[in-house]
Length: 357
Image (cartoon, rainbow, N blue to C red; front, top):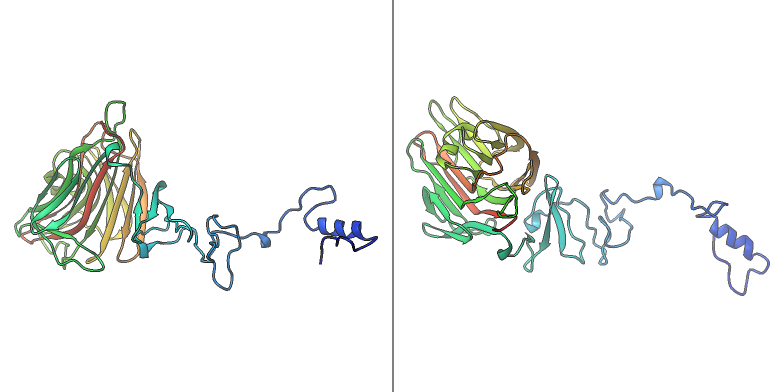
């Protein structure tokens, strides 16, 4: 085995021993030898106690100072965040990032343990959120207004889902129920005088036994995202009809669209583009919905997480986007085609702008 010469020893052999030692990593001309692939650690590969990753702490997929392996791209479900694009922080760090179709967002592990995004301070943008309160009241936080339609109640909070509000349509044909936040505060345009771009997220649960059509003039439409002028128009037609929107939609209407999966729909007010998210709509499942539109950009990024199943899907919309100058409102809502009450439950419906006036 190669070694360094021993001071005070190896008389007459220093040169031979030193050259043998240096020759392990160097060519005869002094250049470094190439490293065999078998000697290189793949930091994205899975590790186990039997085959630990060897690296300097702080690299992605490194062994932390405490010896706990933190794999790149791991799911942080236990901390409240889903998505294979989420990165677990090393054990000696509380910061990491998560991606919405390639758009990175800074996150941290909060003081009490759950994961939470690092956002701008309240005075540096436009923020608006609807949240549960009590009785028939929905709490409003931030800028703008919160409006709702339908019957609002608050089911008993649970350890798994926390406090949540329920919104139900009337048991009459064409009834709607919704929560809308921001009051036309959001716009994709960006210039020196206006706010521009948006980020939105909502967490919804669907408790009913059935949301599907069961015969003539029956079924429901669900939407989560942004709408332009009329929420009733958005919920009253498949893919929003002629309503400007950028939203996750699930429609199951007799004689119309019958979606097995959530769809991401963009509508410029004239025509719509629909992308199948491949995320199934499943009864009694809880979902996180995310979308981000860069100020003055030509795309809208989206992600949907099924918190119950532990799955995620994401993508980018580039066609038939709402025009840059269209004022939009963040919302979650449902309409019933027949005389059946339809409900959804929410933990939050939130929107923010990248820039304040």
